[in-house]
Amino acid sequence: MSSALGNLGGLASLAGISVGSSSSAEENLAILKSREFLWGVIESENIMPILFQDEWDPIKKRWLKEDPDDQPSLWGAYRKFTEDPLLTTSIDRDSGLVTISIQWTDPVLAAKWANKLVERLNTYLRNQAMERSNRNLKYLNEELARSQVAEMQKTIYSLIAEEQKSAMLANTQKEYVFRIVDPAVVPDKKYKPKRLLIVVASMIFGAILAIMFIFFRNAVGNKKNK
Image 1 (cartoon, one colour):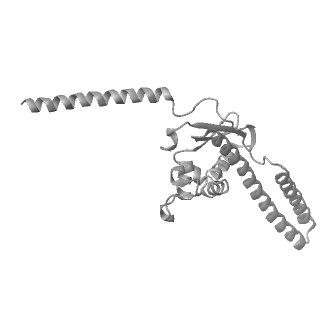
Image 2 (cartoon, one colour; image 1 turned 90 degrees about the horizontal axis):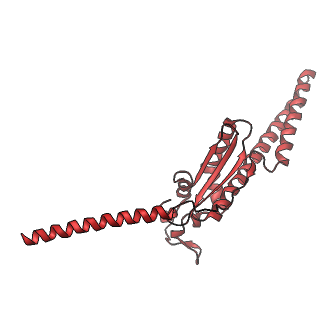
Image 3 (tube, one colour; image 1 turned 180 degrees about the vertical axis):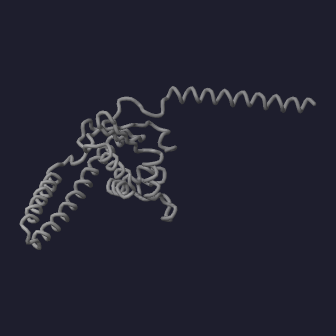
């Protein structure tokens, strides 16, 4: 985010407990970074005008360029999240904790987005689990109606009970996959850029320009003398 990091930056992070194994946590984080999921969050939270604020008219509530082909796209927003990267994730193999971080110029927004991503991911995965359970229950009940074998019916009843338990668990747990241990908050220190580094870099760059100018002026003076 070349334009974004020029201002006060914020890094908001939160940690959640993974779902039993690192492989399942990795799968869920892959969903978090997927195009379909992020597009949904970007649209529902109206993040586009914030990501591309230089191209947005806040008074008229529209893009500065009228041609849709010249306006920022969801693909561009997705790349900002995943390639800049605005969104980063990590898994602690020892503790099983998952950390989700958002880096943005506005630390308040960074914290809000980080918390919202986990909230929506839990909702998304819970809905998927409930849909899957409903499909399985429908299939099992159909098989139960067709089966005439007592042992088979007993097995199906057992599977139905397990599936009903899974559906109930998904329906009642708000933090279905990730339980938030440490919610994202506004950082108490500036994350990027560090002023001291900027000042030092500016001074060095200014000194280089001054030296180059002196050499250039001397070279021009020598040519005139010749």
